[in-house]
Amino acid sequence: MPAKKGKKKDAMDPVEFEAKDNLRRAEAEIFSLQRQLDVAGQEMQYAREHEREWRERLDAFGLAMEQQRENTLDIMSDMSRQFKAMQEKHLQKIDTLEKHTQQLQEDLDAKDVEIATLRVEYEEKLAAKELVIKDLKHRQEVMAQEFAEMLKETLDKMAECLESTDDKGINFDKDPNQSLLT
Image (spheres, rainbow, N blue to C red):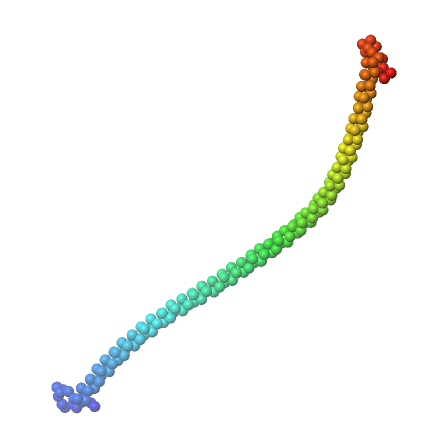
């Protein structure tokens, strides 16, 4: 209510006092609410900055993860390709070595057969030579016996001739052509 015009202003009207008090309280409350609103605004701005930073970090982490995944896939692809190439190379080498081993085994088997054949031939030739040697030794012994007999006969005849010449008195100094057998 408005104040009456005829009264003094020294004394305050309780209604007016109450209105001023309410106004001061309202202003204080408004100031407090503005202060809370400012603090809440700052907190919200801080939260938004943090959210933005976290989103940037999350985006960077996502990009790093994607890049890492791509690198991993590239590395795995490259390693897989290298593994397949090495496997193929090793399989070819194994195949070549198996063929070479088989060829060497065949050569070895052929050499074994050749050695066996040569051994049989050698043993046959050795047996034949031993037979020839045995035969030659037997013939040598026979010839040695025949020679011994012939030598004995000759020596016996010479001994007889010498005995008979001693009896006849042949002089070898005079006539070298004189026969011992007559």
